[in-house]
Structure formats: structure tokens, C-alpha cells
Length: 248
Image 1 (cartoon, rainbow, N blue to C red):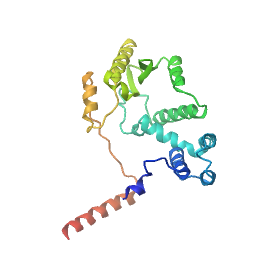
Image 2: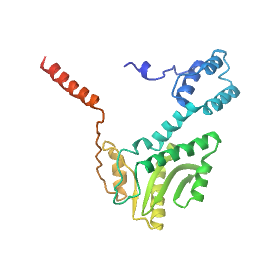
Image 3: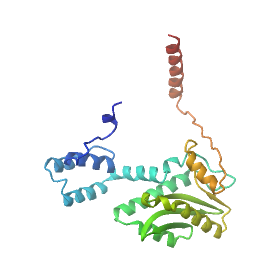
Image 4: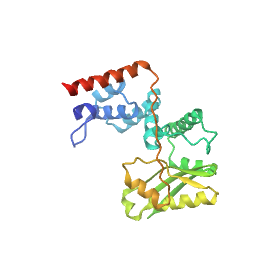
């Protein structure tokens, strides 16, 4: 397919009100602009900061903004990978599919509250202050936040949830300092292991980074079970079609 079909392309210079409407709508709604947004763009009012802020507030108050929340937490916090593996029932007997769904939904609701109430990262830190099982660790360099790490404890295991750093401070390796601090925090609580979450096999740099801290690399296999017979028949027909194409 052509890139123009898959992506929103624009010239290097600033785009017009219609370009702003399109990007704003697909960012917050994952859909095309509605009539009100098109009207504001057609009249040249959308580039006005006051009008733009009003439209953003209106769009965030629309139920379609839930798509933005699900997509953001799914990618930023890797909730899309929540079902990629199944926790060991011997270590986590209390885990089931309902708990997994609740974990994802709680994260979505928390982000929704942050957006709707226009709250900042300070509220995430306050959450850690009131919940001794959650730790938000910040790295400061030159009075600036150079990076952060979010860790949560569940029984004898501490989990790395999310983290990031500012590229201008990359030479100081704030991620390594934050991880060291997180491991010490987990050890102080008596945790027996520190889970650094999964990494794709092709990202060897991440695997090396984890093994540097003494992590054990494990392979998790997932299986797809086809429930609809019609789909299985389709795959069989597709197989024979490919064989016929190769023979012709």
C-alpha cells in the first residue's frame, strides 16, 4: 500500500487548520473529524489557541476518547501484552482472567482521571506515597527530571512497570541508576525476585541489559486455539491454494 494511504503526511512547513483537525481527531478519537471540528477548520478558527483548547476539552469529554486511553496505556504500559503469557499458577494461584482484565481496566480508569481532571505526574507520585506497594523513583540532574521508574510489589516479587529518560541526559545512564535503586527498594521489602518483564528475542540490547543485573532469561510460548470451524476451513483452503500456485 502507498504511504499516503497508511499515514497522515504533510509538508515540512506548518500545516493548515484541516491538517490540525485531522491529526487531533485521529489522535484522540482514532477516527475522522466530526462536523463541528470540520466547521472550525473551514472557518480558520481551529488554529486559535482558545478555540483549540475548547475543542480538545470537548473531544476528551466525548465517549470516543476512550479509544485514545486504551491505545495509550496499551502501548506505553504494554497492556496489549498482558495476555501474551500466563503467570505460573504455582507462584500466583490467585491470578485468573478476571484479575487480568481488572488490572488493565484499573490502569485505563486511572489515566482517564488524570486526563479529565488535568492532573500531572505529581498525582502519580502521590499514589506511591499512599500505597506502600508502589514506588515511583525519579532521577534529577541539574534540577531537571532526567528519568523515572515505576515499580510495584506483589508478594515476594517486585515488577518493573514502566520507565523513561530524557535523551539529553543519556550519557549519565539514569536508567541504570534508577534500576539499581528499584532493586535495592525491592530487597529492602524482602522480595525474592525482581521481574523486568518480557522482551522480544530480536531486541538483544534489552536482554543483555537485564542479564547484566543477573536476570534469568526464560522463553514463554503462546498458542492460538481456533474456535470457529469456518476459519479452520479457510486456512485449509488457503493452504491448498498456495500449493496449487507453486505447482503451476
